[in-house]
Image (cartoon, rainbow, N blue to C red; front, side, top):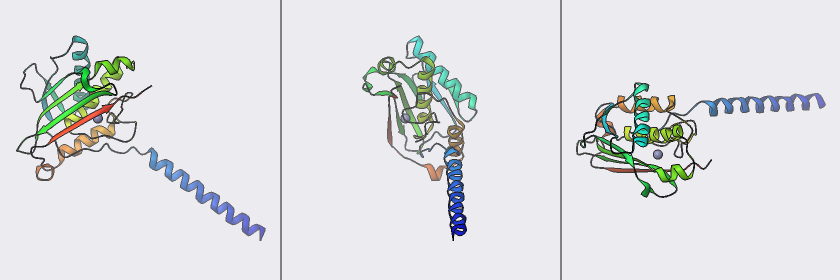
Length: 201
Ligand SMILES: [Zn+2]
C-alpha cells in the first residue's frame, strides 16, 4: 500500500515537473508581435524628420536607421512636406503619454499618411535616456509600418516600451504583414490612432 502510494505520488511529482518544464518552454518562446491589416503598398515609405529640434531629429533618424538595418522595411529620409510619414514632437499629448502615431488609409486600402510624435515633456519628467527615447521612436515607427502592440515586454511594440529596441518578434511580423496579399489586407479610408503610455522606472 505504502509502496503504491509512493509510486503514485512520485508519478504526480513527475507529471507536475513535466508540466512546469513544458509551461516554461511555452512562455519562453517569444510571441510574434501582432500586426494590423493597414500597411503601405510595399515595405518602403518616405519620412520627414526635419521639423524637429536637432536633438529630436537625431533621435528620429537613429530610429529610422535601426529599422533600415533590419532589412524588413526601408525608410527614405526627405525634407519634403509631402513625405508619407511625418515624425515630430508634441508636448500636448498629455503627461502620461510618451508618443503617438496617427494613421490614415486611402481609398485604395493602403496607408496614405502617418504622423508620429514624441512627447519631450513626459520623456524629460520620467528621465528617459537618449537610447530609451530612440526605443520609443522605434516603437512609433513600428506603428507607422503597421505593427500593433505586443503584450510581452521583450518587444519594441510593448505599449509602454522603454527598454527594448527592435526584436526578432517585431521584424517577423513586418515580414508577414508585407507578404500578405492585398485582397486580404484592404482597409479603405480608415483612421487609426495609437497613444503610448509612459513606463515609470
Ligand atoms: Zn504603441
